[in-house]
Amino acid sequence: MQAQMLAPAAVLIAWSLVMMVWMAATRLPAIKAKLGGMGKAKPGGRGQDLEGVLDDRINWKAHNYAHLMEQPTLFYAVSVIVALLGAAAGDVLAAWIYVALRIAHSLWQAMVNVVSVRFLLFFASSLALLWLTVRALCLTLFPDLVPA
Image 1: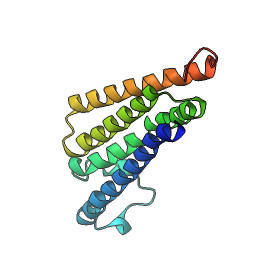
Image 2 (image 1 turned 90 degrees about the vertical axis):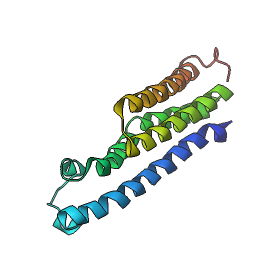
Image 3 (image 1 turned 180 degrees about the vertical axis):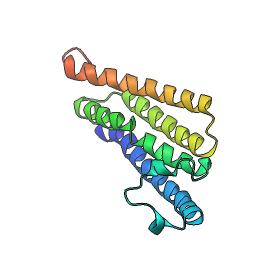
Image 4 (image 1 turned 135 degrees about the horizontal axis):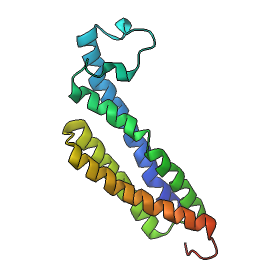
């Protein structure tokens, strides 16, 4: 069951790289058109400096990429803990639900970005993460009481 538990984490890592490429593919041409290219960027510039400079729809991809570097780091850690200590079928299902909702969240934020829907996707994925966190706590704190 280890591979089944780790597969969703691998898919989310791959998705994060897809978002990175999508971000670059939209941002770099916009930077060239608006600012004259990366060579004209001020020293020490950061992505946040492009807020209000590039179109919001361009920046949405970068916002989502940043989001994929935040809460999912908890998902990666909890996935490894549960995989090592004994994932159950419900854990694997929760992991896939988390990944599916995070991908839906990415697509929504990158293309439509209505915050109320984005929040629901985030909240639902957080519930799946909460399930996995409780399972990790039970498996680590009460290993003799928790069936795998």
